[in-house]
Amino acid sequence: MPRLMLSTTALIGAAFAATAQDFAVDREDISVGKRPYSPYLHHSHPDQVFFGDTHLHSSYSTDAGMVGNTAGPDEALRFAKGEQVVSSTGLPARLIRPLDFLVVADHAENLGLAPMIEESNPDLQRDPQGKEFHDLVKGGKGWEAYEIWKNAGAVREDPLPDPALVAQMWHRIIDAVDQHNQPGVFTAFHSFEWTSTPSQRNMHRVVVFRDGAEEARKVVPLSFFDAEDPEKL
Image 1 (cartoon, rainbow, N blue to C red):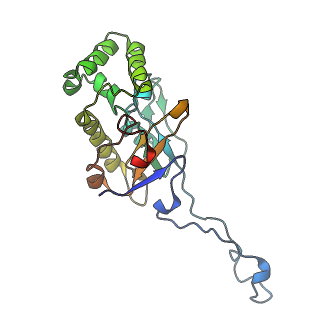
Image 2: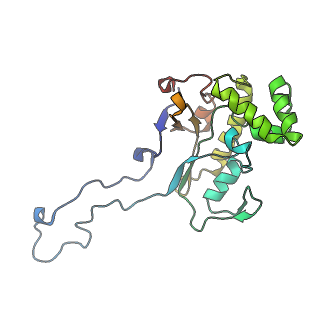
């Protein structure tokens, strides 16, 4: 059984290799002679700090990919590592300072719908609703397709209830994360976002796997269409 960690906005510190110093030493507690024993004797703040993003959506999130985001998980990870990528506006973009880690947390709800439409995925087109989405977008009616998808979510009716479609795109994300993960240099986490909006209030959960690709492949991301109770995670 894969082991999961849940986070809303921040990743639990224990997930990192470094150990944070969360204690402080008062000068009155130390007596080592007249001269300071070490310039770092009273150093009490963390000295291994890592910068990253724990909540990134790529084009694999339908509410991003169907409204203009063209950057997938691979581009997101390369950008986080400091490589130059082409942004959704068509312009080159690059970080001045690369990140230390990235959590690609795409929405589980119909994961990867936008790229499947872009590539005219045959499995998607075998589904009547999938084909309608595809034909609308390819016919220049992307916003109309998005509105249909959004309205289905509002009444919690999965327009594409095929776990095989989700699994297909989930495995692509896993492959990208596994490829870019560099222990000791850059950490890429296997993750997804479960999304719920009870009474129009956001109740989102980012699910982060402590395990590697092999364990992550054993599950299909749980979506709001599957369960609206976060305890089901």
